[in-house]
Each structure stands twice: as C-alpha cells, then as structure tokens.
Image 1 (spheres, helix red, strand yellow):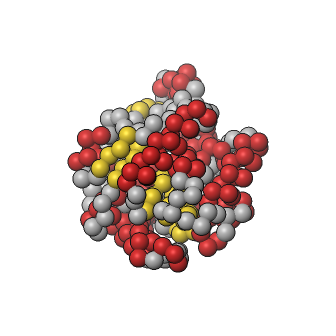
Image 2 (cartoon, helix red, strand yellow; image 1 turned 90 degrees about the vertical axis):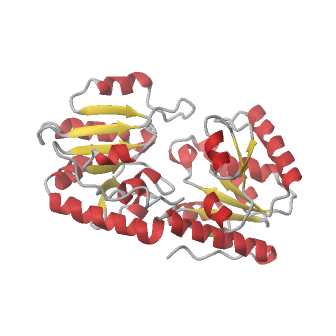
Length: 359
C-alpha cells in the first residue's frame, strides 16, 4: 500500500518501532521515524507512544494518517484527538482481545473503540464484512467504513508451483498461537498418521511471548519429536514452504484476511481453513478449498483426507485460488483501491465517502 502511494506521487512517511527492518524500509524511498511501540497494554509504554506520535504529527502535518492494526489505531487516535488530519484506522483483524480476551477487557476496548472510531475525522478500513459487522455492533456508524480485502500479495514474485514429489504434505504458516488452531491441526495430523501413509505436517512460524494465546515453548518442542512433523521456525521466503507442501491449512479462530493463505493461493495451493471471519473470504467452500468448524480435529481429518486422496481436486482448487488472488487480492488491486481512498480524502476531506472495494 505504501509503495502504491509512493508511485502515485504521495510522500510516504513510516512511523514504527525500528529494528532490523530499517534498511529495507528506507530502500523503498520512505522516510522512516522511530516510534516506541511496545507489545502489551502497559499504561506507561502507551503514554510514551502517544506522546511520540503526537509530536511527529505536529512536525509533519500529514494529509492522511494511515494506522495499521488495533494497537496503532487506538494509540494514534488518542494522540491525535482534536486534530484536523483525516485518520484511516485499518483494522487488520480484531485480534486476541476479541477471540480469547476476558469480558472486562473486551468491554473496555469496545467502549474506547466506539468513542475513538466515531470521531468526525476518522475512517475505518476493514478487510472483511464480519469485522465491519462486529464494529457496527459496538456502535461504530456504518458511514465510517471502507472495505478493502487484505493488504495484497505480490503475484509476480509468488507464482503457481508444481506439486512436490513424495508423501502428502500439509503446510501451516503463522504465529504459534492457540487461536490460530495449531493444536487442532497437530491433533488431526496424529490421527491422519494412522490413515494416510507417510503424511507430513510442516509448521512455519514461532511463538509470541507477548501474546497470552502463545503456545508454550515446551509444548512446541514436544511436537518436534513426533513422527511426520517438521518445525521450520520463522522463514524469510514463504515460497520455500509452499514449494514443498501439497495443501495449505490455517484453522484459525478469526483473521482480518490471512496473509499466509493469500500467499498459498498465489502459489496455487488448495487450502483448508475455518468457517470464521476473514478466513472464508479467501477460502470459498468447494471452489478454492474446504471450510471446517473451529477447533474440530475430526473435521480437519476429513478435509485433509479428501484433498490428499484427489490430485484433481487439489489442482482445481489451487488454480481457482490463484485466479481469485489475481482478480481481487493482488498487491496491484489493493494498492489501487488504497490510492483511490487517499485521493478521495485529500481532494475533499470534508465529505468523506467510502470507496468501492476492488473489482
């Protein structure tokens, strides 16, 4: 999205926690500003971030502020209360608070979002209709929303791949969190080992100590010794996973629009995911893959077994998945929709209207 804005003539500034990504961000021609974002809900760290963001906006006076993710949206909205700049709050999924967090926390965050997102200078960017409906139930008015499905995937860099030789292999890419459904997938693999000769499960991702839903390290290490399971950890090139996988699986509880499945689809892989918000936007049941209930290892066994038994079905789903990404979810389509939104805001900020989703 930032590249599309740059190529459309916008001056792009990136405000984020800066670590190993500095060189890559600056190489794109973006102006980088270090902001002390920290994981978690510490009031002291939140205040530090809010002050830094307010100072930066006072200095830059940007035409548009685009906040990505729940934490950035909340902190930036607080930092810029009373300011005239239009803010786009990109809700890239509603996260742990809405899937596993306690009722008290959800209530507190819900009240805060209702207040912040209804500000007259705010727009709310969602990646799927379910997240919009959830936020509307919190009291965010419908006129605030723009729907753009995901952040895009590079369909030139990720291209359809031939199936690998050897045993059927299921690939999982994502953080190792309970609400990604990884435990259900591991259990399904255990059961499938008695049904499908040599079936493999490859897990690409790592735990996240700052997230309460993170799988304990000792549990993850115990998977390493199980037959047929390979732990790749974090990988820098996602194509390395899909090149050696027949099937992509992400049995998540909720997503914005899962990047790992977008990438699998771009590589022409059939997919299995849950009938959950965000997930069912990329996996169209019976067209690009199969949907299963949340936390249902038996359903995962059946779905994986169905795809494992049919090379023809895998090929048909994989081709349809690639076509869906090319048509509606490529970085080109998402970038164009984002630039159209920026232009609408900068041309007439006083009459903000939602932009149509990419066709």
